[in-house]
Image (cartoon, rainbow, N blue to C red; front, side):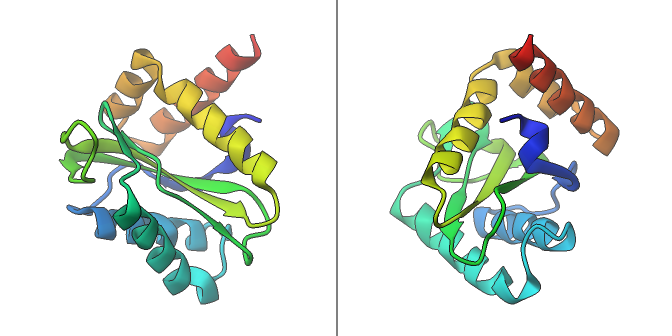
Length: 157
């Protein structure tokens, strides 16, 4: 599985306007709905469930990244939104630092193996300082896509 398999260019938000976690989650769910990765009927439920998940334990893992995620019976295909914040978002991260890069993952309820594969590919890349740095420096959609494609090429090579 590659990042570009689960992240549609239309679900990338190179400049999040959100200042807080809940607004960022909403903005990214809206991007997935706009990209056709989730139905508008599911929007409110997805936002609510992701935020509930965050309240149980933050997915802000430190190093400026967060990976909120939810499994949902209405989701038919693994998909993710990617949002970048220049100012940083308070995600109640483990290191108490702001989050600049957010991957929001939607998974079908009945495909736990795919969910784990997607989380693995996201975390494998986020563990690389150069990947995090290049994403933080990207300000345009084309630049973000280039970073994702480069990461996929390195994974294959």
